[in-house]
Length: 322
Ligand SMILES: NC(=O)c1ccc[n+]([C@@H]2O[C@H](COP(=O)([O-])OP(=O)(O)OC[C@H]3O[C@@H](n4cnc5c(N)ncnc54)[C@H](OP(=O)(O)O)[C@@H]3O)[C@@H](O)[C@H]2O)c1
Image (cartoon, rainbow, N blue to C red):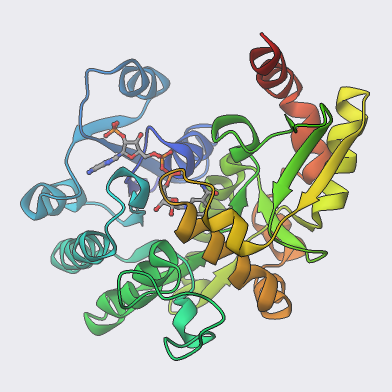
């Protein structure tokens, strides 16, 4: 039997990387092996991956030497950064540069880089409608990723640039699910007006990435966008209403109000939603559900995600009313 191709996966204990690790391990005849990268091999999550059959190694994205070792001998790598761990676009760009260097040094045959748009190509700094943040960004956690694409191209690393979508899991883990307003009624709140928000089950991102690796070099040098389904706030609220058996409204607020909500990163996310709203035709058009399903036949649409996560969603409701 031919030797398996090893994929080194960053963020292996997290949302995107975890989905890819499990997708590879669930397909033992698929021709791939997985090297799960974590900062600490002794956590429950890391041990669980080892138990499932992953090679687990320790490396930190901020340690270029460790990254080089983590990629050595592998066929490919899944590269993702963790903006919300530090909120620094400059640090994120340095991390991508180190990943690209490590991929080059290891002679990887295929890297998938989990990127996003540099929104300044659509809304330049001179455009006052979306406020400029930190003097040079519109949506820092998007712009830093998009600006970093060149690190891979400049070094000639065979790379697929993967545009991901909003995780529906944010409804459970990020407090974005239905919440009671001052009127006592449940609502989800977004500054998207009547525009569609491309969304995806986080687990499906890794499954789509596995589909890309399985298709060999077909998407090397290409940008591909993945999505489970693109829905308006009203459509998502209707899905929650069905699940909960009581009305959930869609509370469409302005990006200005969203930016002022006061939680860490509210300005960045307010700008992000405004970008998705104001350039909606481009943004939705860059992410195709039929294509995503061709990579991952188990791709969930919103209703499937809601059904599969019913108890977690209901849990957020009982926690809120406790
Ligand atoms: N939330 C969304 O809707 C959404 C949508 C699209 C894109 N994104 C992007 O997704 C990225 C995050 O990916 P994710 O959601 O998969 O992350 P995640 O679930 O937060 O997982 C991150 C994992 O990476 C590891 N990690 C954290 N810091 C690390 C470091 N310095 N070195 C090595 N490993 C480190 C951690 O594992 P250990 O503790 O085991 O090391 C952690 O389990 C962000 O950049 C965000 O902008 C998010």
